[in-house]
Length: 164
Image (cartoon, rainbow, N blue to C red; front, side):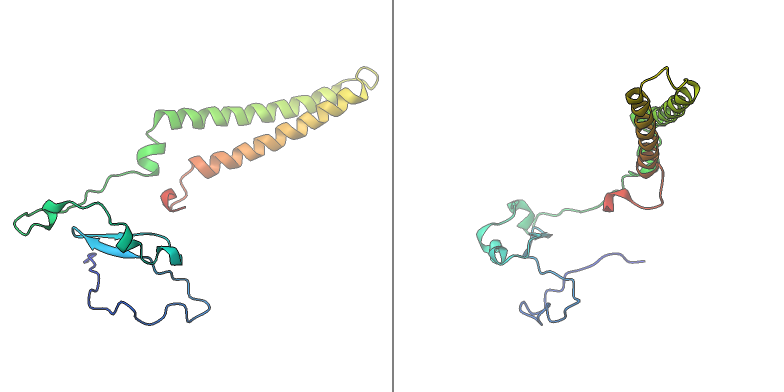
């Protein structure tokens, strides 16, 4: 499969208007080819329309010399969930620590409810029992939120997180 592309240089600069359809989601960015590299400014505001004439990208004169030869190549670096999160010791430690914290919050929630049930009605004030009840609810909600956070950030979901 050929994955190379080339910019069409024979296309008219002022071609058909791009915003003629209401559902079109396209923007025209100012761009220039210099040293065999396509440079563009990702802003389609009118003030950036002529930015190519005002601000040039970095120039390496040796690359424009016809006697100079060079090769451009690309190397894939395996960076993703399996190469970073699984093999990274700090990520692994954070994952285990957050799972322990989640269990501790759940245990604290159940323990505070058990303490409320076990105490007799006259032994603890209403304010203290309400505080225990609110703490139990907050600890339980915190454990559920932490469970969602761990799932969302540490579990593999089958897509590239860099494109979020």
